[in-house]
Amino acid sequence: MNPESVLRAAYTAFNARDVDAALALMTADVDWPNAWEGGRVAGHDAVRDYWTRQWREIDPHVEPLAFEPRGPDENAVEVHQLVRALDGTTLADGHVTHVYRLRDGLIARMDVES
Image 1 (cartoon, rainbow, N blue to C red):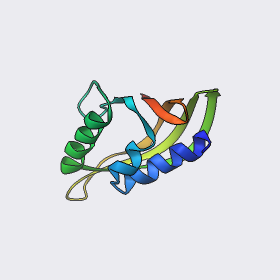
Image 2 (cartoon, rainbow, N blue to C red):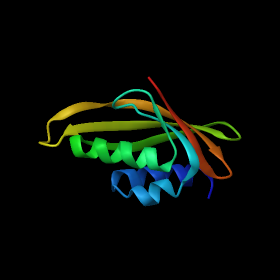
Image 3 (cartoon, rainbow, N blue to C red):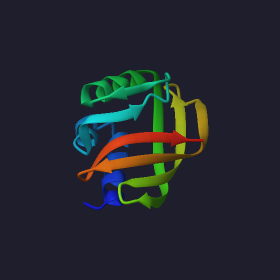
């Protein structure tokens, strides 16, 4: 798969709460931002734990809008991010940029740009 296809599939899996499908698109040592609580997490188990905790508290939906290659292994994705409380109240609604580094066709790192 090309980088855009990998990233689109990752967003689809995240929005469907399909952790296994999302993790299958990541390196075993993936470096991921903990944008909700702060800091970073590393590896499949840590990402699974982070997302599972997050989804028990909030309902995020992230829709990719534009893809921009920044180099052979780096891609930026402008996204519309809608975060709701579990009761449906909107907590955040806006655009952010996610920057991915891929290794061997898999997501190795993600950063959030404001």
